[in-house]
Image 1 (cartoon, rainbow, N blue to C red):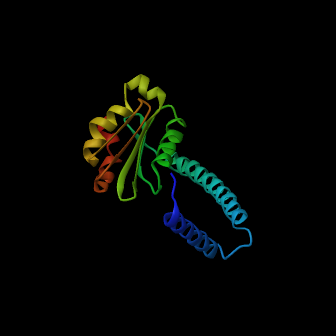
Image 2: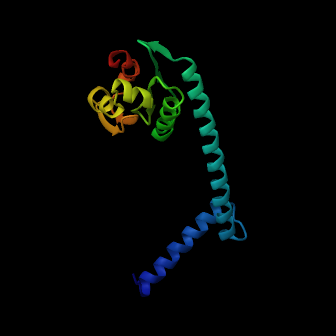
Image 3: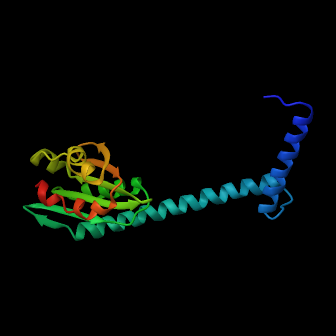
Length: 178
């Protein structure tokens, strides 16, 4: 795109204003480019530390939930509303729990940004022996309850929806599935 004459001058002035604003925000460093590069490096380092801390927190939460699993008709069941701030962490939590024991069904839910999020995990042994299917549970039972949608595989599936007020019922759904 090409600009000429007065438009070119206006563009240059706008760009200079933007650079001055950025410089002011960064406390007027001598080298603006180096300052921005340093901020990018610091951001990447902080992001990496946060992700590491989140992974540790999810592992600990998984262990705590496994320890509190309920035996329902010979199947270990975990149903819990947790405080996580993204669906990927919720999914990882369900995955970590489902692979820890051979005879386990997990339903974890969270309110994320004012919407409901649910992850269902079923150990491979239960998928084979009892024919349980996380994808079917999500589509046939949970998605309608939370007015949403979702899907996945037989061992692990997720859903998102509008109704966070249904999460307490969702996490106890395992009692009706077995």
